[in-house]
Image: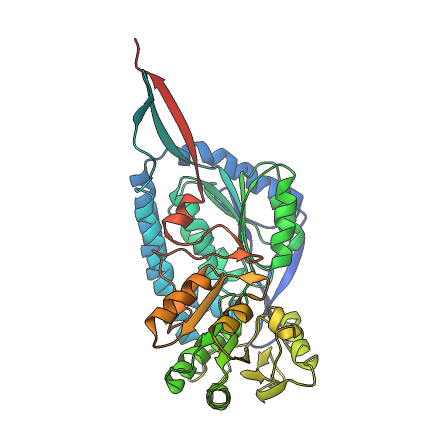
Length: 479
């Protein structure tokens, strides 16, 4: 007996709508491998409608006071708290994540981030007015950029939607947001929540695939395109946006080095690193997946890490003992399996290295050692529950290995030597350096990388500034 699939819809101009041509795509729960909903496969007509709604709403939202925008975002944050269980349920169905961890590790930060940007709305900064030329006064206006086309990823669909819309709306912009085609459910629910607070057209959601995203970025209306995704996707967005010189905000892949020196407490380091490497099935661009260990403690560390991996559990969302759930989709499962299948002969799988179960897209916590710097699994992003381990001889070699990839998003250093930690924080070419921890983020501090990890910042006042433009105004002091 077949079960009727739930119908998700676009949210455009304050209304829920199907795709103009009626096309849909099935949405699959990665924990079961079974479809639970359909979502619009939006085309040019849908993107046109969303952009028109956002453009129409922009002048009115731009002209609201920062206090008005703050009040709206605080109401949204309150609504997120009130409807937390609905958001968790939608996200778990989207992703297969553990229910308890989604409730405790995602809802509170999201609410805090919305409230942070509510405050940021009232902290518009610019140089003080002054007379830099005789008889003339200059000052700086900080303004919203306009309509923002935003594309969110499937690894944290709910939280990344917040990272997109909160600073944009706080700054006075209007938004057209596209969730991943595999994880639209929580974003559609977010549209319902925001729609109860914001004027029509300020926030719009268009569901669809890669082609839908391309249509959004190439559309003439947006002044800015923002994407969190793969390097390939970011490069495509940058190329498309260059045709009409749109602003671009890119948060892309990562290959975070985790540099472990010989003076650490091995057990404590392994506990922190394993959790930061396997959380969310390693589907995190900041995940602690590339460990560099001093040669004098390498073997001990590998043995302890393999033991920790064997003790970590993956499984269904309602199992309270699991740290992480499935990979997001069958293509991602194949990608992770492919990295392990193609390992060179000198590599050793110390733990895991296999699929778990025959339903859903689960993969065992995996540790791979014996690797060289130019191995594929060291150079390319796996985006799965796989931690690699290399050894280094001294601080200089650790820096060379750490920086020797094309990504530059996040990193960490584990040592009791404060001076060494400070030297490493300077030498590591990454947008974030954690010391004796890995993966915590706070709303007040910027998140973003260098090199092929993209440019622009999420979170913090820097993230807010990215959604503004500055204008010089000069006035004569003469009558």
